[in-house]
Length: 113
Length: 114
Image: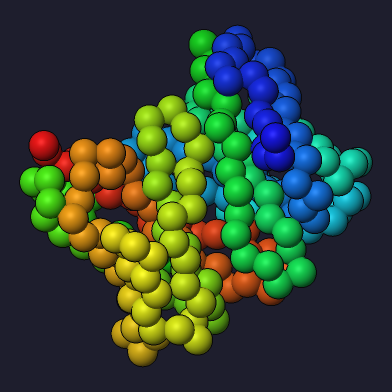
């Protein structure tokens, strides 16, 4: 099955620890994205990558870091500098090259205690 | 940057009625407007989208209209069914190589009562 896989589905971490969320896609998409969703709110863009070894900050990049070493993978690290890390994190990908639809993964719910 | 406003925040209808959700955007450079449906605990799923060179698009019970001059677009669901109950998000993008670089509205919780 082609698609986007996010793991784990639920993640618990202690305050002050860095944590890395996994996102893998087998759709051969060039572009990948990370969004954050808080209860009752829309999605906000954290980082995005249009091509391997390149990425740009989105609207709320502070306290997060990413890497794009492989086309299929776009991991997100939530660092201890992120003041309110508890949220639902969604990864997406799109073909790029003028193609439109963005496909989303099933999300990772991160809880920091 | 782009700002997308979505109304209403909640919408309750009877099965078989129509539902309309409206969004406005601020950036005249936006040219791609998707609508997503999100069920509890899941990722958003694209249900319909429209580009700025089209005024209306329909797919069975779902339609989207776009008014570029007024910078607003709407989702219309006809003959609603209980399985339509979910959170719906509108979004806007300036496209180019990153159509997935989206600015989302705040969401509408749609409840369809049997």
